[in-house]
Length: 437
Image 1: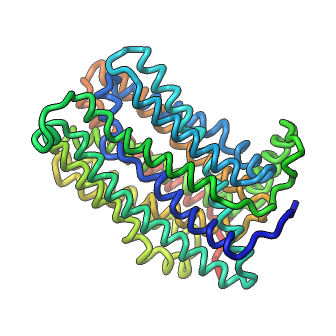
Image 2: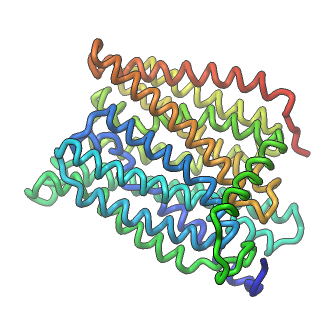
């Protein structure tokens, strides 16, 4: 239903707030030390992977219902819920007890569930609100597409800069030895929790950005109407039906799942990889900052590739880059392994741009958040399955080979899995290819 027509200023503000919300929501100060943070708290690598599988399961359960809710009651409410969930998520890690066994695991499990809820609520809702704001600003489809590409590029670039800062600062404050040499002695647990505290501050800004968004009145129900569970599930079925019947969209989502699941599983373990090849802790942030500049590199070529080649070819290019990166990481057990890590990150940014471009161009406004949520649900389902499988396999291999050798094997499994998955997808997706005009 359309209530009060939003002004041009409201629409432009929505676009700006979308960019800044995405930037701060995704630029987490704990990313350069993500896996090592949890193991330093007292968890094993296998427990950490199980927690990430729980995170992915939470997203799988709530991703699509949250997208449907966004279409029913308004996108702003879901973005605000996401920001508040992020705030509580960070607060839990700040107060989590170090080395507390299963009690620590339970607190971290609640943290991962909240993190999954935050991702599920924001995914689709913020992007749908921003894209429909652009749609109301421009009647001409070519101008709309051009503006949306520019917004995606701006988001990638600002997010890259924010990630550079987060990587450098996060790794620095986590390095207790370096921090004490700069600021004098203080307890080691303070350095451990500082990246989380900085994320908590970011979450406060995210809440403020979400609060100032303007809903467009595209939602199907007024604020006074109650939303029933049956309506949510009918919306879920409608979104799934749209994706299933729009076969070329279904095909590119599955291609993205194959690439994202492998690449993101490695990126999650990246700090453990740096520790495995014995890089100094302070260097992780510098390397992570360099990788974050992928948001500046990818826009230099991705718009041209998207216009020149079909979606199927574009996803094979992104998948090929990811495979080369993962194969390089699996073979190089020294500082040279840092170089192929960059290819893995480039492929993730490339895939994200392509998915947003193709889905938003095709999805109807009244279902946009739901359809974007189908995409995110599939990505996180794939990531969760791969993360859980690698975690279980590592745990089993570690009993006979030891954790170090098991980790090296896991890197090989991820690269081989991506190669096989890409080959199957390329053959299976041939009937559903679409060439962009």
